[in-house]
Image (cartoon, rainbow, N blue to C red):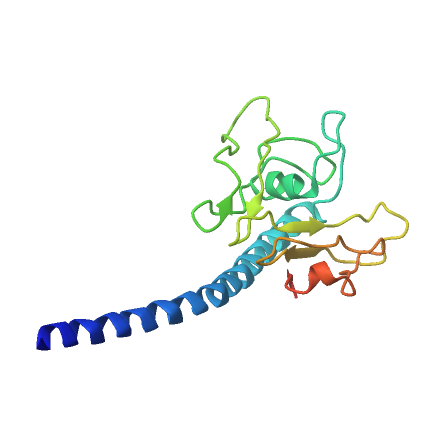
Length: 177
């Protein structure tokens, strides 16, 4: 009888711990998103040091890739700011971030190939990246980098290059500072 009582107490304690840990999980993912954003920002600054500007919207092979693909290819040493493909320095450590697939540039690949991949936030959604200095409406002198957060919903940045703070889809987004 005493053993049953002790087991019941253990089950209650384990249930309380499990519920507590479950509540902490979203918080830890938010912290991870902030950490990932800082790491990507450092890579973007290294890219700017090498090329004089941040990765921007370009045409590659006659098509306009997603900005998330541009970010990936730029920071993995595949693309210069003008859209030229090459074998440039890799600025991201693959073991630090999550990616949408396992397709990565091969060092020394000739000719260099565009890779369809993206850097994922802790919820499995690509980090969103915008930098479009060629757009005459773009007023932001910097890039916009953010996670769509736990709900994976977002309204894109404004035409001027500012976070669209008034949209309800952006309530849980996590922006680079």
